[in-house]
Length: 472
Image 1 (cartoon, rainbow, N blue to C red):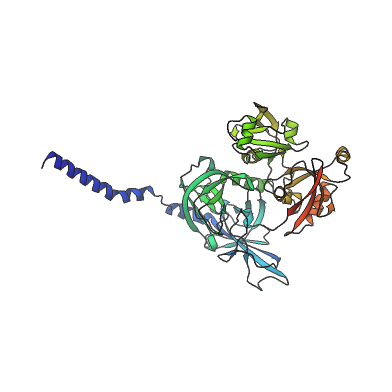
Image 2: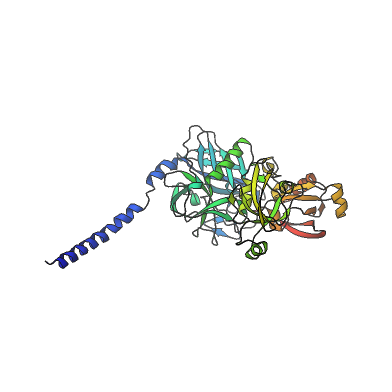
């Protein structure tokens, strides 16, 4: 056999070996979730809630027997209508919801999504050992969609918390939850993006994955390969009502910070600047002398707010906050919200073509704790904070009543209606408003499922906007 023939034979054998070994090599590269599931499953729980509501017309969309809300922010796992005649009493019906959660403290503290337990009359938690326990609602935070529950049990199995800051796009992750009530179902995939900001959710840098998430998965844990919780499954983006390849989880560090505040204080405190911001488009960037579209442009400031008192001006573009890039206007509320009220924040701003550093003390969101104060129908329900008008302001505006809007939650109903910080709210629902306390009383009496006219004064002009109080 010639050297050439022997060489060719070896090459053929080597090729056959490589071809035969490819499936084995590919199999070795695929993750094995069996041990993760075995160790984590006992700490994952099924959550079911019920509430009595006034009987309504059948919902417009159904999926798998569950009502599908028709909006961009699709909350899954909620509102399973009872069959006709299944309500409690004359004119009422019982609505049930399904969700997931996980134990993060052995003394019975459980984390889930706020929308899973929203307005619930009864919350039941089913443990892995099939025990069913009635849960107490410790607190909720709608801005991050986090809720904390407490059950009367000791020495419960808990999960290890990971670090969302260590995540990388492309790494394997797994979810355990109760899609459609099938508890302890496992799905897996990869992280497809991090620090994702969604419309109406400016306080959460979401983890985007391709893990299959469906109704009932809400509030369940998202794991890395080490079995650590790195996120809380919260949303999907869908046109059909079911999973379409995109799911979003709340980073665990964000969720745990909220949970700790809910346990210790009963509400969540956030930093507040008192500014109205807008995105920086390419044309705006060029006009302000920026090489690229970045930052948050201050369009207006709340009178006597932290930003106004700290020296910020309309027209400033905030490029960094405490050294972190503000790559888009939606990034700023999250960065400022993470600063404790009273602490200082260093801002890099562009003003008249020059970059300068401004340090100021961050205030506290004016409605902090309002949702936990026993009246969720206060102005915080609309996503606004109001201040009384001074005598000088009334005289200047030619008004004998009204309140000034100090701040507007970007994710709230008022923002959706076009209400801005600095506006003067004169009337709501045809009722004159003379003080923040009167506004709270009026808002408390407003029923869900309607649109009400709101009269505003802005830049010396009076006009009306329609504020929708449609149910979630």
